[in-house]
Image 1 (spheres, rainbow, N blue to C red):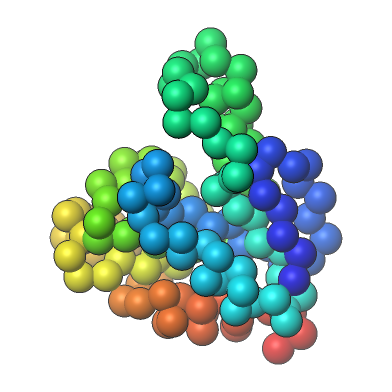
Image 2 (image 1 turned 30 degrees about the vertical axis):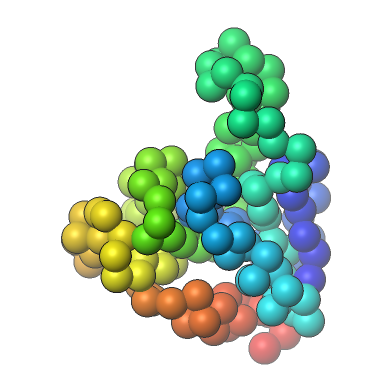
Length: 153
């Protein structure tokens, strides 16, 4: 497995999956690490926006170079990825994840994990049904779906 974490260059040389979903200033469980650990034996390239050097005090403005760089990295990675997984942690609101679902639902490259208890599960379910986005109910099922994307399987 090849891991690319923001803000590293997008040097993608195998089937790539963007890890979209709940972070919300660490209110969400670190679900990305669960997937990264469990996909270590694959040939996938994982694009992880959750970065160690994030500073929650950064002003969320187009004028803020660090913030703008993060958002631009995420958009470029979402566009470049072969696949996008979106996890909606029930302990979060995840407005950016909802935005990402809206932006990429019609691309045919999204899989969603939206467990019971997510505050807007109904909206997510309806969008996924309307646009044919596959859905799973747990991280374990999401991991199974990601393993199927490995080009050597």
